[in-house]
Each structure stands twice: as structure tokens, then as C-alpha cells.
Image (tube, rainbow, N blue to C red):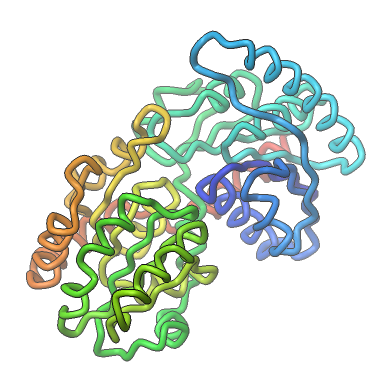
Length: 367
């Protein structure tokens, strides 16, 4: 099978696409891939490292208010559709899948106009503008939440879950501990603000570093985000030695292994993160980003909270003290932790990538 993948801007759009590619490769080792993204997006850095051919188009998002910039965006979209058609005709894919972000718009639209089977994957409860636009043209829509089914055409929409859930099931707990240098008798708390990091989370953590260093039998894995790592490292260096029970990293490339070893996650409520922790049953303290469209992270997080799988701490109420209170309560109450683990596992869809690949194979056969 020849597959074009597209999705960009953030890791939440890119990693699901790569998870689908890995599942296809597991089932069909001879499969060929092309990833079409944006030069300015994170995908331009991540995808080539995976050994997948990468090409780019120029595209930007529409402003939600009337603006002359939208005329430029429309022109860029039409140009990107034309360029996408050229790439697609050259690669000759059997199917195209878009996993979100502005770049999906022209690529998936071009594929639909060329009669190529197409799928979009919506990771959040509330769909973004791009997927709303594409839903009319694509062959199949895959969603992660039951609430999303009613927001797309019923005849072409299927509940699959997020393929990152399948990806983390291949994680190795021992490999994660070995990478971090953490013994088996230590509980691991992973603090992770997303692929680009989160300033508010970083500020809260920096204010309680000493208290975190006093947590018994607990190792803190603090992932700052690459853009914040240098500044945070300098702040910590001025204060003195980093606590012995803390590992500070800019990014984690072997996240499935690290998550497999994680006792509690503290972080944002991006769709990929939620898919990963529910597949593994990792209790979480979720701090949704308030800077995303439609406030979708809080909507995602509240679903886990209602199921008893997570505690939600909104950013306006986030302080070092409020975070420390929630974290210590969860570390000290084994029964609550076990109930959250059970609630998390009940939401997990670890076979999501398999379901998506099955749907892709089906629309190719129908063609």
C-alpha cells in the first residue's frame, strides 16, 4: 500500500500520523509513505528523523475575524492545493490520511478532488475548522470520542480512538527506567507540558523544586520543552544542585517507554497524551491549555475527570502550592490512585491504530 500522511503544527497532530505509519508497516512491511507538511511546522523536524520522505506546501490558518490576511491565506490554500495535486500525481498513493492542522486542508482536499480515498482523524472532542471543512469531501472520518460522532456526517464517521494509544502499548517499562536511571522501588511522576512545553507549568514547578525533592520513594521526571530548557537549566543552576530525585530533560523521544514506567502524569490535556495515559491506565493531574481553539483541552480533560481517571487543575488556579497539594494527596492515597487507574483503563482504546488501518484498507478496497 502507498500512503500519504499529512498533519502538522504540533506533536498532537504529527505523532498520530506516525503511529498509523508504524502500524501499517507492522502489517505490510513493503508499504511506501510520503509525508506532506509545512516547512514551518514541527513535522519538518520530526518526520525526517523517522526515515519517512517529507515534502512541504506553504499554508497558514484563517483568522477568525475579517482580515486582509485571510485573502493571502485563501491564495496560499489554492496554491497549496495545486502543489499537492502535483505531489500526489507523482507519488500515486492508494490512500491519504490527514491527522489535523492547517496543512491537512489543501493536501486532503486535493486528494479528494483527484478521486483518491481519503480519511481525516479528529483527535479532540470538538473538531477544528480544517476537519469541519474536509468532512464534506473525504471518504471516511475517524474520531476519538463518542461525543464527536454527532458532529460529523453519520454515514462516514467511525469511532476508532487515537493511534498513539496503540503506540504506547509497545513501550517497555524496564527500558524506560533504565533510560532514566531510576530503580524499581521508586515511583515516577512525569511532568510534561506538551511537545513545546508550557510556561505556566514550568513556573509552578520551579516554585516547588525543593518540596518535590523531599517526596519519599518518588522520582520526578521534569520535561521542560526544548524552547524552555536552557532558561530553566540556568535558573536551577543558580539555585544550587538539582534534587537527586529529579531528572530535567528538554524532550523525551522514547515516550512509550517512559510512560510505561510512570506512576502519575502531570501535564496538558492534548488528545494524544490522553490516549496514551488511558491505554496504560496512568492516573493524571491535567492542566488544560487555555490557549487552544474552542477550549478543547479542558473539554477533553473533563471527560477523564467525570470517569474518575484524572484530576483537573485549570491554569488560572495553577500555583506551585495547588499542584503540590494535588500531587501529594495522590501519592499518599493508594486507594484513590487505584480507582483512578481503573477509571483510566476503562477509557483506553489500545487497538486504535489497528482500527484505523482496517478502515484505510477498507476504503482502498472499495475504490
